[in-house]
Length: 63
Image (cartoon, rainbow, N blue to C red; front, side):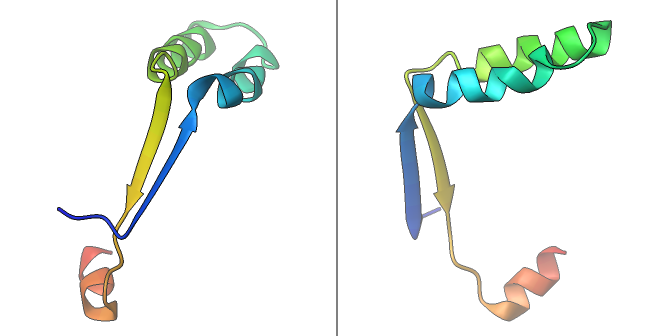
C-alpha cells in the first residue's frame, strides 16, 4: 500500500510527554500494563505514521 503522507519523529521527543499520562493516574494493574505497552511502542528511535487519501465511497465503505 502506498502512502500519500508519511510523518516521522524522534521518539524521545514524544516519550516524556506521552508517559506523563499514565504517570498522572493512580497506580493499578491496568495502568501499569498500559504504561508497559506504551514504553514498548516508544522504544524505537523513530516513530512513523503513514496516511493514504481515500475517495469518499471508499471511506464510507470502511465505516
